Image 1 (tube, rainbow, N blue to C red):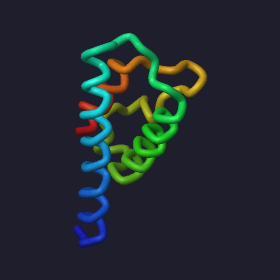
Image 2: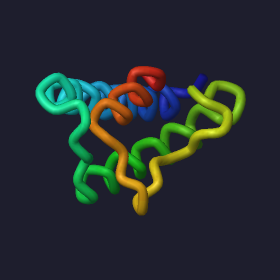
Image 3: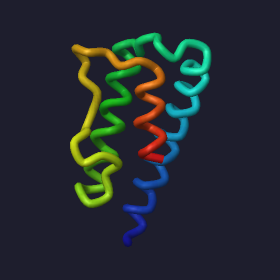
Image 4: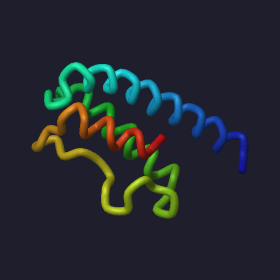
Length: 86
């Protein structure tokens, strides 16, 4: 493993952890509330980058890549997925 890979992993894991913690708090208060599109765009970008880094072999879910922006997920849905990435 190269230093570049370690740096990318540390960055991604920190970002996933941060978003997970933020949405965990929201999910405890209002688990069924929808995530707004602004946050969802950032979450999807992070998931796509994570999927590329992890490759197909290590992805959390084989058939999941990102959330559908036309069918906005609930806070609890996002927390569930992010917990698997962690």
